[in-house]
Image (cartoon, rainbow, N blue to C red; front, side):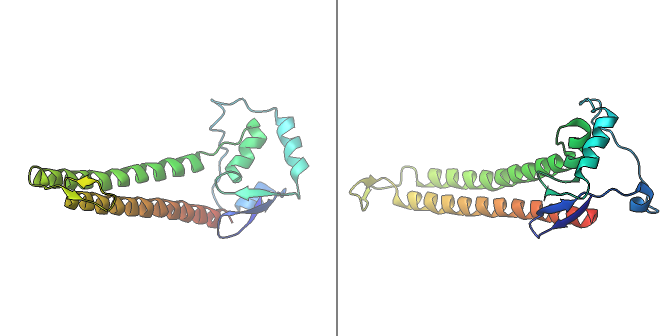
Length: 176
C-alpha cells in the first residue's frame, strides 16, 4: 500500500500488489499475526479475495482511524485494530493527566495557604453587585489562580495535540 498524505496525516492510499522481496528489499521482515489469539482470522481465500478486490483502489488514509495496520487487520480479521494508535493515545493521555496533576496540586496548595492567611483578618466590602465580599483580595487571588490554571490546562491540551500530530507525521514518513 503506498500512501499519499497531507500534513495532518490524512489523505488517501493506493492499494498495490507487489512481491514482498521487492517491497522489503534487503530489509528484515516477519509475519506478525499477533492478534490471532484474540481474534479469529478469516479464511485465507477470503483474505486474498478481499485484498485483490482492492488492488489499484484509492482508499481513505488517516493515521488514527485508517492506517496500514488498520488495513491489514481489517483484511485478516474483518476488524480494524491498531496497537500503534492505541499506544500513542494512551501515552498522550497519561502525559496530559500527569501534567494536569502537576499543575493543579501546587495551585491548590497556594490557594489553601492564602485562605489561611486571610482567615479572620478580612473585613466585609461591598462588591459591584451589592453583595458583601468577606475577603475581596482572596476572591481576586482565586480568580487569578483559576485563570492561570485554565490557561495552563489549555497549553497542556495544545501540547498533547502537537505531540500526537508529531507522532502522526513521523509514522507517515516512516511508512513512505
